[in-house]
Image 1: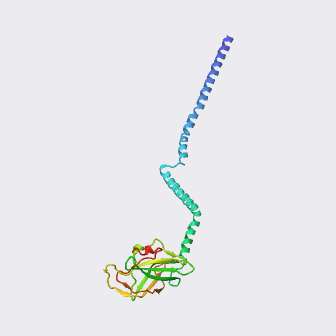
Image 2: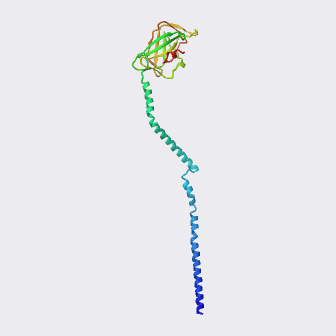
Image 3: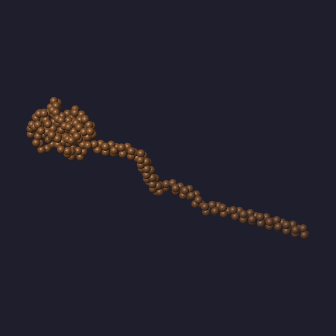
Length: 243
């Protein structure tokens, strides 16, 4: 009888132990369940790449950043241009010096030149005006000579098509030329008259008068009429007699 009670007690103890172990196991399993709940609590974490991607341009922000980027690029380009331009000032300065040097040359006037005028067989009713630099420095012959035949009250017009591409510079001892059409070959001119008096004036860089007019003697009387005209100063006499 005593052995039977012991066995029952032992069985009860084993069953109780098993139940305790099962309960502990269940508790352990339930204790591990919070992990998914904790993962759910961290559910926003997958959006971190989007937050991280916010460093890349978003549709609205990206435009602003792109604009800023372009501005930065433009700024960089400007700096590059300035950097490249920093090497350019030398030639630019040289060009200014050349222009300044050209501008610093004296203007051709009656004091540093000698004027002569001659009749030419071709074209008819034409004369060639020659100006020779008698100074020790080159001079600029601007525009065209102003002429006054006899007692004329106005200067004759210029052949605009004869305008050279650059100012004519005359070196010491060298000459420049201007052609003069004294009258119409077909006699169509009006108010004609003959004279042996001719005065020639020079112009400055601003088309103003440069010095006094110079009297140029004529070997014989020249007949002039309303078609009287003159060319711009030329470096070649043939160019001066084309008009």
